[in-house]
Amino acid sequence: MKLITAIVRPEKLDSIREGLESYGVQGLTVSSASGYGQQRGYTEVYRGAEYSVDLLPKARIEVLATDEQTDDILDVIITTANTGRAGDGKVWTVDVHEAIRVRTGERGAAAI
Amino acid sequence: MNAGDTAWVLASAALVLLMTPGLAFFYGGMTRAKSVLNMMMMSFGAIALVGVLWVLFGYSMSFGTDAFGGLVGNLAKFGLHGVLSTGKDMPLTGTIPELAFVGFQAVFAIITVALISGSIADRAKFGSWMVFAALFSVLVYFPVAHWVFDANKDASGNFIGGWLNQLGVIDFAGGTAVHINAGAAGLALALVLGKRNGFGKDPNHRPHNLPFVMLGAGLLWFGWFGFNAGSALAANGTAAFAWINTLVAPCAATLGWLIVEKIRDGHATSLGAASGAVAGLVAITPACAAVSPLWAIILGVLAGAVCALAVGLKYRFGYDDSLDVVGVHMVGGIVGTLFIGLAASPGAPSAGTGLFYGGGFDLLGKQALGAFTVLGYSFVVSLLIGLAIKATIGFRVTTEAEEAGIDIAIHAETAYSSAASGGNGFHPLGGKAASEEISRFNADDLLTPSTKAGKVSS
Image 1: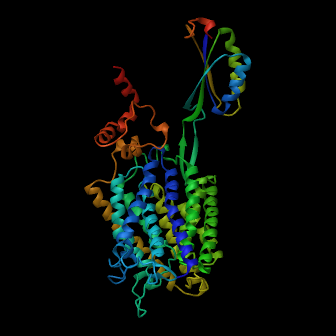
Image 2 (image 1 turned 60 degrees about the horizontal axis):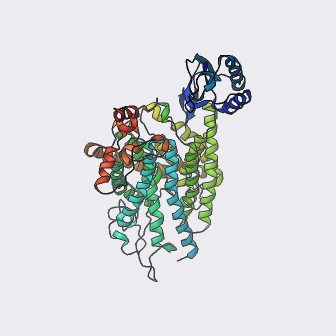
Image 3 (image 1 turned 120 degrees about the horizontal axis):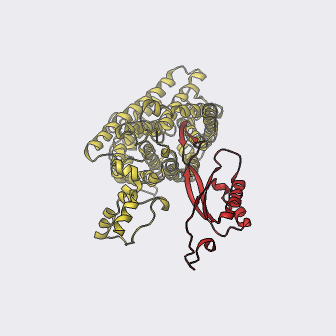
């Protein structure tokens, strides 16, 4: 099992979610995040004074997947989150030792 | 008495009162989310305090019988003594009841004080601000309003009003008495209080709500038609003349400010549009009955451009005039006041003759004298009041309170629910419980929620 974590543009959240649902993903977790990558932030101008804003708003998506699903789900996220511009985000996976559905006690792939 | 004139002045007074809540939005939007309520409270505090002072003795000090060489009125009209009759013996100012004039001038006193608060955003103790507001009103605004606005004559026609008015300085609606006055006081307070923590560096100092700023600027502009056109004290051609200039000068100033921004920064911004409109309103205030609408357009562009450049001075000189009271009101007021000396048309209602109309340097000299006398007096006295408050009760909140947010530290409130989430109970306040609740609810709790949670679980 893998935990897929994606940091993406907040405005792409809906299209990513639609893509994942049509692939068959049952559930995901979304949280607000802020940060920056290679492109750093941007500059705002107020009455001639410049403020550089480094921490940009991002959406953090977490999805649990079986090993077989992982590559497909990564493809879905990368395709739907891509705009081709700097700031599209990053996706990574980590191994998951165990997953348990709290309500039923099911474990492993059955809990996903 | 003329019913039409009275109706217009009473309506204008209400319009001008609306400017101060408008100013609260204008200023409040420019502060950080954690200090917006304190910013707005300084305007509402000015309304409450100055409104009372005005009726008690402010009107008498400004427009009562001159007590001392055109410098200040006496206290014979304390509590509006002698002007309260509404019958046949009702005292008049021109064609309107003197009481309508009392009300109209009251709202000028209020907004002048409120304007100052923009220079001390995020860091002033509210109580100290209120003490300053009272002392500034008594020692600066009431006398200066007498100097500029009081044109009283005695029964035999001898002038007994303010000395600048007698000298022939033209200030139709308050370029000197209101804007230069407030701007100079703002500069003094910015120096007394010192810079905000992170001034010029911390990106969190940027405005938290620009729609508030736009709303506030709109309300200010709306109210300003009462401010300027109401200053005719009659529903007549002079009022219409001032109204048109109050329309066109801010329009031109908005364009002027935005053009400077586009060239200098690459973007025409909403804050720039709101600021430009206000700068144009400030500049046309003294001149709205003295210059033609064509000159008003030129004045507007000039004021918009000059003020857009002037707001950067605080970074160059290192004083934290947080919301640009100096750059917009003092500089805009000076531009408008001096411009009268150049472009005043003898055919306009104020009937001055500027340099461009063959009047020579006479009027320009008078305007400069008026502008810089008020500027100097207001700056020096405000500085002394500010220093006295700083030395006694203190003027500035602690660094911790400033970082946590002045709203929670001073007012025990937050503007937005996201600023204070969670909590461990609700108790209706009252009596002893109230003080306990407020002392328990301190800003440190907000700063370290994880520490607090740790204590609860252990």
